[in-house]
Image (cartoon, rainbow, N blue to C red; front, side):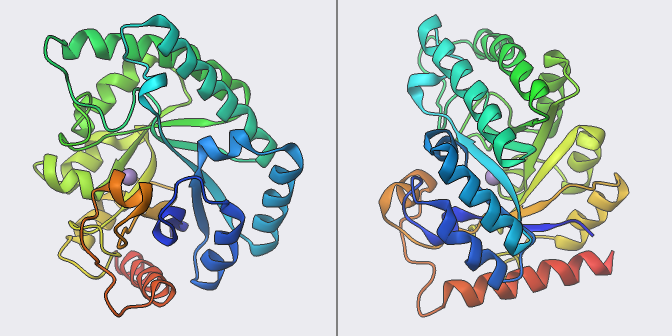
Length: 288
Ligand SMILES: [Mn+2]
């Protein structure tokens, strides 16, 4: 059974929200893992990080770290100063994670998010810039026992890697034992021919996994083919966490960046829905 997690953004409209407040919520709702904001932990004091680490340990929760890099630190940017800023940021994340005892750094840690291919830009040129920067940044991940999990996104959020196959090709070129893939059913639903084949394609490269229905409701409230997905994860003997990323609330920077433009919660209760979804995922895993 894979540890089951939830992304903190489910409960907030702001990426900069203090992660400490979500520890008791994740525990209460029955999760094993809480995914928090990586940039946030780089801005915390040592004392704040120690407090967070102790609270998570007390709650029996593992923490994973999510990244959506901003345009001013885009590893694919033409300006080397922008790329260097990104590399320094990723080194800072790895060091902060070490203090917290964290191992999974995941998301858009290879460019910026969201990112369109602008007029005149060449995908290959930008991808090569990103690979060169990740090769540099990942040394800090290696030194701090951090797995650098690059997230494959759908075409509306990024151009660089839209399929597991493209993700594996990127990771192969980075060439580090700490470079892994993050696949996300929400993105896979748009881009992959089949869930099973893409998970098998990722195989040993898979380091982290995100769960979401097609409209990002909590797993169990939609039409995602969960038996196929959990069956394929079992086939590759995936031992990592499965972290759900439901987003129901419009507004704030989370609602804006995730493109939540309507109220998907209605009269529902966030904690109750999260708890039910955790139970659903646990039951689906048991079936395979
Ligand atoms: Mn995701």
